[in-house]
Length: 246
Image (tube, rainbow, N blue to C red; front, side):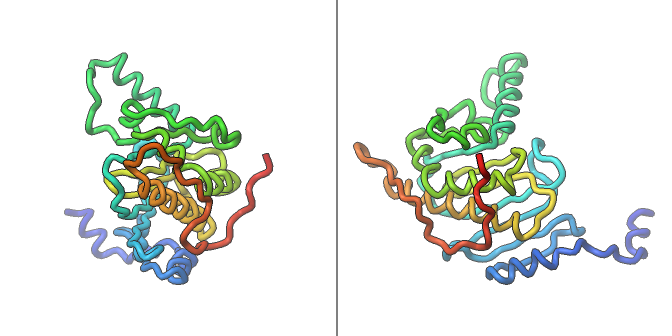
């Protein structure tokens, strides 16, 4: 009760200065709203005529420290089209935790309370990234249909992931990109949500959505070549850093 009274009578604390982020959102037709107690913010609007939600604030996953950026969009993908890309250090961490949980503990089945990104490492086949010299060092992937996962990564998505290694994903922070229950999700550790980092995250998400829709268009077909288009359907949302020299 005393603490509540103190907060009531204390002058308000100035919130974080996210003027540049709010302006970035306005330029791209997104609404900007501060989260409760100024712990983060939410941006909502449309990208490519589809509703999108962008959140930044306290992490919702234990493997992320500090602050987390989350992006999600409803795509109405086939429910069994489940694909996942993780930063390699995160993949190795979750594999280690999964191994310890199921082989050294007392569990005999997958815990449904564990995040999907952990359970999918047990449930789904790995996507072969051997043909991607740079990506295979920094990322891992699994999918309910590994061939579909391979097609998803190809083209523009692979290019954007490699490009982000020089900026947003430098030093391999925890990063997750997935399709789940018909939606597309991006989650990554991000301490400073400046417009450059946001533009890079949106560029990755844009490429992932476009490729997922292309793959979904051929879902269920047999005896065909998966689409290999590297184009994206949306206009770029900001300047991109050049690919790192490797």
